[in-house]
Image (cartoon, rainbow, N blue to C red; front, top):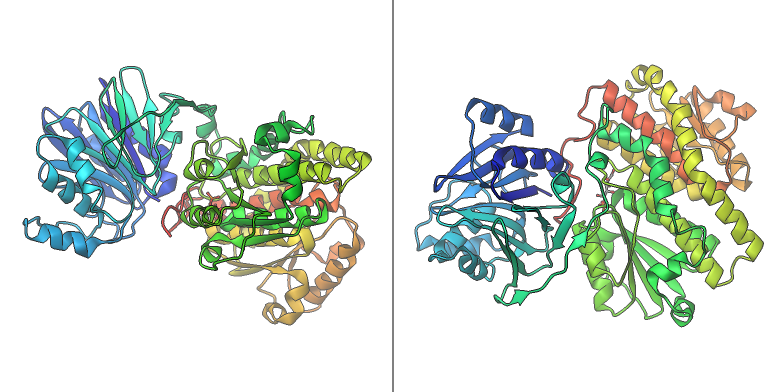
Length: 605
Ligand code: F6R
């Protein structure tokens, strides 16, 4: 969950490291620090709290050096103070670490006899001591020895004052190498390096890289040299910048229509596009008679929608599983099951472990991922990238919409090959899906205006219920998650039909309910009568709908979307809910892009 960046070249590393850390702040933001090699000395500055505190310190007491490492922390071991901040130092060696070391005691016993005094409460400090213990003139060799003693997950950046080298180590935590011209980089992901390069080497677990300004060598943990081809990433620097918006979250909500369009681009006009991308033959597709999707958080809610459409349209029995639970279930998966994981970051530890379990069962695996070259993308047999561009705000928005776009494309693709839709139906679905990006943009425009005026009233409540049925039930869950994670207001998403079985007891004047009113369908009247039940108990109502019905007059606030079929409604209904959460959090003055206690990539279990 922490962020790592490292530089070696001719420039002063400090501004590059700081810019890199700012771009990585979404991975953790309770403390930060940098170390540089300056005239054969390692100089370190650290600060607790946000990166701005580190910048303040560096302003007062500048550092410079051509080799450096930086870190932004999400605390696991030891409270978030300056001592526990990274880099962590030993006698000769300084490191930054992302991950968790699980055999702390064992390492302490091993090092105890060698008198390494502990300064911090972190597990990471032990990595520095361990490498230092093995250091005998070659930093690479010391790292190659230390990795065999470490258990857990670790992406590490290492420097030592005797060598003009930067070492990166990767094991179950992400680390990429950026290739520059007379300079090279390491980082937790590609985003902080986009201003300098779009050429990357993606490390696999169990690899160490030794880097100087002109050379990059990769070894496995046994010291064997590895060849890795260069990957070119198509994200741009501008995509990773705020572009005049107050927060990344608002920018990313505004980008949702275009993100969905990018996801569909080149894949929808021709029904065979996915087949070409996946290279699946007819026998393989015919053999799939069950789908299991695993994911966490927002991506799990996308999975719930995926389940709904795969069953209803492609007629394939599908389940959606919370990855952190699924991995412990010893689920029975047979060879006709397709296992799908969904992840924006491609690094979520629980999702990765679920994938690893499915692979151990020998079944085909497909990932739906946003970050190119990420661990999940590389581990799965097949990958469909969402192409949403970098998502910086911790709260996921455009990645969700793009995940939906892929799930719909994939469903239509399977429906075509499995012949669950005839040509006309396929055409109609495809036509509507193509209209979705514009309708998302329209939904954004319609609702954005309203938001400023409503935030003062709706930010006063302490509890909310979000209610939806059928395909809109996952949107109720996602809407509630958005509100709670960025505004710290308690919100629960419920299946509207479950209200009478408990939650209705919560309804009173100070617990508003957000109703997702489906477009005309069987579900409509049932949802409207649920709304009446709330209204007669004096509960305030916020309604999200495509149309205005008479009964919606019960609602104190009606948020609308352009008209669409029920099956496509999730794409549009989520937008006002994201804006609703955003405007409340922004009105309350919270740091919307960096909500407390959260990190964007949850790389620990
Ligand atoms: C919520 C949010 C999280 C992520 C979850 C999974 O806004 O962003 O719930 O959806 O941590 O992350 P990925 O999709 O990267 O696996």
